[in-house]
Image 1 (cartoon, helix red, strand yellow):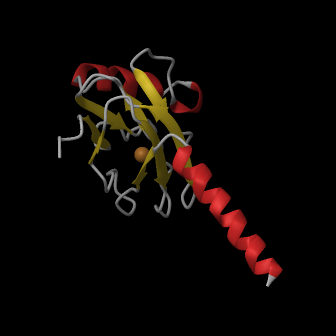
Image 2: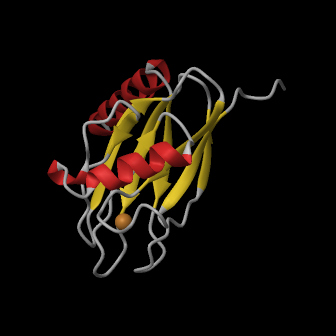
Image 3: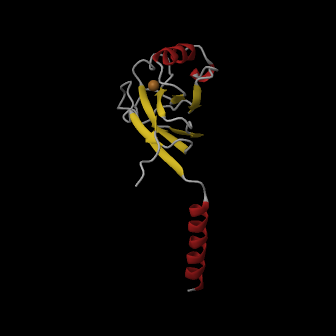
Length: 148
Ligand SMILES: [Cu+2]
């Protein structure tokens, strides 16, 4: 009985703590089989929101990563994707990179937590494993929550 009470009290503490912590928006992204495609090609977050981006590499043979850019400019996508080929861990040192996961081998899950831009807009994310970026892209939409 006392054990049950103790368990109950500790659960209350955990719930209380979670309620106080800053909300984190969790986004899960996977590839489409072994294609050079993200299954989730668009997700929406609020300006300045803390985003926990989880990439589950469900592919059988393809390694992938997720690199979030501070723009949707095709020229910048091209610049980052091209520079990645020779960069360490395929992530170049580029000011347009907002956040990135490490490379996930097939079956591996990686994640990165970052703050969404304060400016509403559309932001591209790409896989920078060599040969992937031109096909493997998606869009992070930053938009204020509609008033309810
Ligand atoms: Cu990839």
